Every structure is written in structure tokens, then in C-alpha cells.
Length: 255
Image 1 (cartoon, helix red, strand yellow):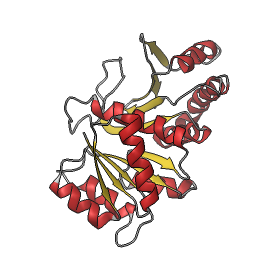
Image 2 (tube, helix red, strand yellow):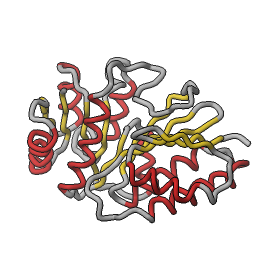
Image 3 (tube, one colour):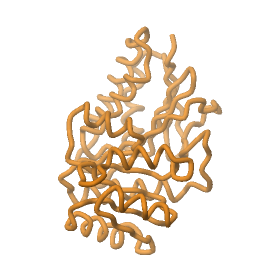
Image 4 (cartoon, one colour):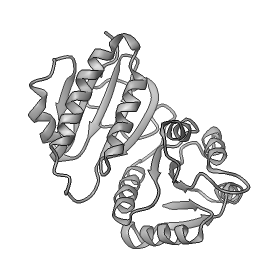
């Protein structure tokens, strides 16, 4: 697997390089670039699987780099994680609107970044092939084709990730069906708040959608047990399927 780190601060590149080599997989080949122009040259000459990029850089910033990579047929399947100190809803929305698959905030905390990079590595490495119709893996057990090419992953190591999920859900729901969304968010909040915040590591949640339904999947057993605890008190407007090591919630997006 090939990973490209794009960051104008040499110290940050060294931190990320060391984490990848010593905490993820020493067989990963790591490339480095100081800006988007250098990054595009490396991507042109090498097969890159994961792109970790800063946003505020000289010559070519991360916004333009992400857009160019995702708009190219040859490179659109590269998994892109933006690692940036930018904050605020509008800035985060801009990062995702450019095509980033994931957002990691600075300053980098070592345990946090290790957990997040492990999840990204796990996700990308288990893809046997990439398809234009379904770019990433799915935990959807409902046999419903994913008609819309929408995918994102989150971790729940920081509370901000939960609100990213809520933000994405709100964007997917039509205005006529906000009551159902409110019910589901209540379940999500109660389940999350009941977790032991001292657990070690992060876990991933995936969001996908078809024409009629939204699917939220999770692989963390503690969170799955928390959902079971609170689901009985919620309206029966959505369906939950529990697998041995995962859970997927099917939420109708249309009334």
C-alpha cells in the first residue's frame, strides 16, 4: 500500500510518517510532498492508495489538490483524509464538498491520530476492487442497492464526530421528514452518552443512502449494545439488523 503525506510543515510530516511506519504497518510505502503541486506529480508517477493532506499550504492548497484528485477518472478512488487546523461548520463543509472522504482536526494528538489512521488503513486495505457504483465497502445487510454514490466514515473518539454524523444525516433528510430524523438523533445521542468515554481506541461508523433509505452502520460492540438498550423506547420508523460484529440501521428518508 502507498500513502502520500502532503504537508508544508516538515515536523508534521515526520510525525505522520513515524506513526504509519511504527504503529500501522511498516510495509507501507510513504511518499511526502510540501504542497499540492508536488503531490500531483507524485500521484501521476505512482499508484497512491491513501492521501493525507493539509489544507492551508503554499503554491497549491489542499482544497485545489483534493478537487483535482477527485475530478480525475484515474485518481478519484484515492482515499483522501484532510488533516487541518481549520474549524467551523462552513470550513468543514468546504473540505467535504471538495471530495475529501474524511476530516481530521489539528493539533494532532498521537493516540487519536493512530486510531483514526488504523481505521482508514483497515477500510482501504480490505477493498478487493473499486467500483464506480459503490466506491467503498458496505455493511448494508438489507439487500438494497446503494443507488446514490454517497459514503463517509466517522470515528467516535471525539464528540465532534457525532455531530458530523448528525450534520450529514440532516443534509440527507427532506424537510418534510425532520420529525423522524429528530427521533433517530435522540437514539444516537442517548447511545453515545451511555458509552464509557475511557475505552481505548476509536470505532468507525458508515453512512450510505439509496433513493428511499439511509443506512448507518457501526462495528463497535459497546455502541451496538447501547443502541439495543435504547431502541425499544423509540418509534418503530426504522429497522435495525444486528450482525455478529456489526449493526446497520435502515432509516426511511421519505415519509
